[in-house]
Length: 386
Image (cartoon, rainbow, N blue to C red; front, side, top):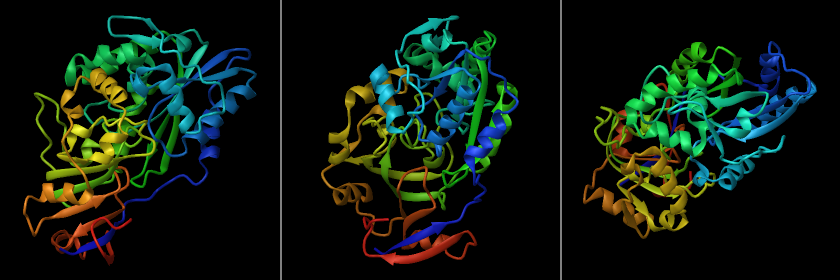
């Protein structure tokens, strides 16, 4: 079977000077001198995140106020204060002290807020806007979700996830509005990325509920996608919560694996092989249940306490189930192929980076000649380095 290295070309609009744009966006917002300001940062691997956080921190200090950073990531990091601190430190978030305690204040039946953030003089949110991996609606993954779940720590994450997908879709905006009504949220810094995982838009807004839907649609239009709809075997080199909340972006792979919920109609992938954890995964293999085959290497790297905490908080147990674990990559592929000698195979690094991939000859026959596809070269084998 022959394989080829292929490049996809996506729309590539991006910001060339992210720091300058952040500063320009912050100009309209006043900060009271002497106030103590919480800056909420999540667990996602966001392009230029240390730069954006640093500019917000310095801007707060220039107003003679005291900034500090609170993890706003629900149950991530094993639902522990130290685990969440470690995630931020690994991202290079070090421009202000990190206050990670996991204690919350309850503001309503499903409404919780990090105690340090609640006791501050105001909260600034920093998060990426993108389609969610478990549901679709007016608000998905972004500032509203950070308010309702991220800032609510493990208690709030469990409370909202306990109601399943419908609760996520309906309760996130309701709870977020309830917390916004406390006056504790000063504004949010929304980030939209292009298909190359580059910063495309940075927008500061105090009208979070009103402005987020348009930013979500912009993010949806600029998502990376696989080049074909029908794949026999998709090989994913790495999964991790720095790549997607579900390890792999369900919008890319066309799988939800939520009991009682219908699966997406495309893409149609028969078998998914996952090879390893990403360096920024925090050793969490949440989302491994979206795959059909994995490797012993991934299993041995996984911190199952962290992974199980993610599964428990989400309530989506199918996503935490361990698939067949092969001893080697070659054995994993053989298991997935099940004797199919003319399989349509695609290999990607992860679901964030789909610009360069490896494709079998049968896939190449479908995509060759498209304006957005460039065939780079044949490769010696499917597991050759990217």
